[in-house]
Image 1 (cartoon, helix red, strand yellow):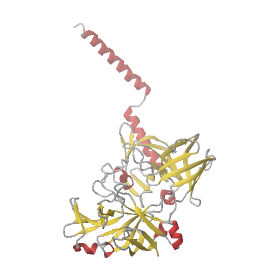
Image 2 (cartoon, rainbow, N blue to C red; image 1 turned 45 degrees about the vertical axis):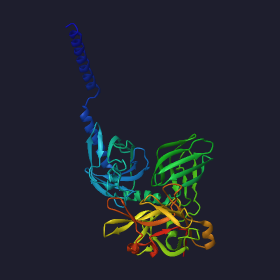
Image 3 (cartoon, helix red, strand yellow; image 1 turned 60 degrees about the horizontal axis):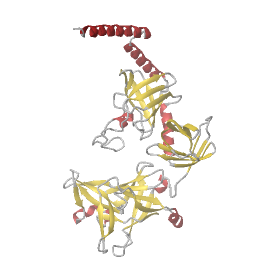
Length: 463
């Protein structure tokens, strides 16, 4: 019993202290927490809907910002938001709401594909860009904690990514603004830059797909890597980048000189000019008819080289082409890499065998001499990640007076198994191999109407 009294006394004292704290808090905050949040929500909604031209948003979708950033423009009414983005051609309108989750939260709560591309898992269904199997999507956001909201700046934080997202009022039509940013995204295709930062030699390397920049400054031991976003004026870093004694927030793009420069009035003078890699050719320059030479292993015992006529025609501008002339039943999708000017012919599904529903793979292969040295054997993969690279050889092109591609392995299984060509392989609906399509039964599908394989691609000369 003696121990109970001190305990009860302590409990009474704790209750007194707690009560005093509550009274003190009431004195500090004249309004309840719920009322303060409600007022913050109302203020945020009023600020968002009051911008006559809407807002520009610097949006970074992934926690580690591995995709870099994307430019958005948003225009709010009391209930709806219209979203423009450099990702899509047309704006989309959806509902939004302000909710309370220990503070005001902006939720784009009905499907808006500009946001939901990054936020919605694709599963087995292909998303807007033909990708599937992204069960965590791109870890992007459509719910944002409102950190602050004024007529001059709105600061958000992605609930999923944790990234800070800044919005500023637009002084022009949101569609026109996004068009400028999208054009810069198309115009900035050079990945290597050289020049100066405040008179010191410097270089920059852009990962155009992942939107990451690597800066190197003479006299500094380490390079600096940072995510960036393409804006209406150039590129802007997720947060200020410091290299040596210099701090940079953004760089302007000059399309006439293909250069990145410091914005007007900046404290640090930056001048970095784009360096085109050897063999670079513009997308439009590569379209046309070609003589393709393949089947040339350099081994006399194998077979004579074959020359066939193919054409590269426009598919998705500056991204993909179609190679026609391989077979009347199908065309090949050809990827174009804007930064290097190279093309990539990757493994791909080209059709379905109706008798059993098997997919027909244009399968990348590695061919080599057999153990006896009397023929060729090969390995093939039902993979869309392996393929061959085609690059314009400047020396051959100058001698021929036209573009001449040479072919080499692209991504492959290992350095010991470079891709040398392609063959037709079936895949069952269950995903298992259906075997080589070597039987005459499949001859209608043979590339160039010759055999079920097309190995040893050598050159492709524009006519």
